[in-house]
Length: 323
Ligand code: ADP
Ligand code: MG
Image (cartoon, rainbow, N blue to C red; front, side, top):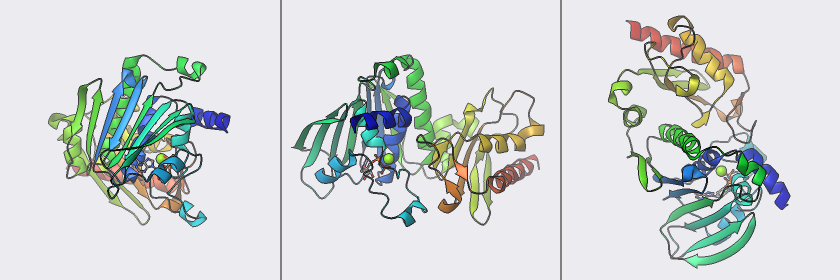
């Protein structure tokens, strides 16, 4: 079983940024208002996510560290209607299998919380503690027990940049929450709760860039496309400045990227790419988010319909900016 967890971990967790994504998505699911991410050495030695969400009872906290324990699916019916970020109950046990994980959590209505230490998948300590309501999960020494995987981690700056990029995507997806990213005691990002995506874009990218962005707001029967796209003048050298989301999850879906590029095709010189923040919201049964453990690619039930709508939405937004 431990081996099973290690294998699963290899797929869920490719690098510290993937740990951040899984932990933060759980914090979002737990109705947090404020999420803080800390890293040391680009997350190679430590990643910590602290939230003020629902927290877990000691029993649930232990259960959460077991494989396929998810509180988010009660029936096969639910599987068709996944609205929360996670649903597989695989992330926590996978991460715990390849790190030294410390979970501290308390439900609001409990006086005491619980602290659990897991090392390479083995539970070392379970104790009652006084702690703030919410959950704090610390992941130390990722891949300490998988030297081959550990070797593949990049330099501190590279891993830190991946975490920072993932953090920005998650913060853009949830303007209604407040976010902090700290690297070795240095505050890298601090975004108070914002009232709209536009406000969040101002916080993240600064006014000079943010004020040039064009609003996209397009509604079809089962699909909504909204966001803020750069004008054709705002050119980038690659697709990294496309912040794409499906049902609020950050994705790097090839088809979606292609649809966006098509809308800009005649407007941009060859080799340059647009800037944009784009949310595609699809009713859950029209999208399969369970294609890949890291959930970066999605599978639409009707890809050509979605791609068409995205193109239409962007073409409309760009056209109205010309007038
Ligand atoms: P999933 O998110 O797919 O359910 P995870 O392994 O990511 O699986 O998490 C397992 C369970 O642990 C979740 O279903 C949830 O009940 C609980 N959990 C994890 N993180 C938190 C958190 N920050 N706050 C409250 N509950 C959490
Ligand atoms: Mg999860």
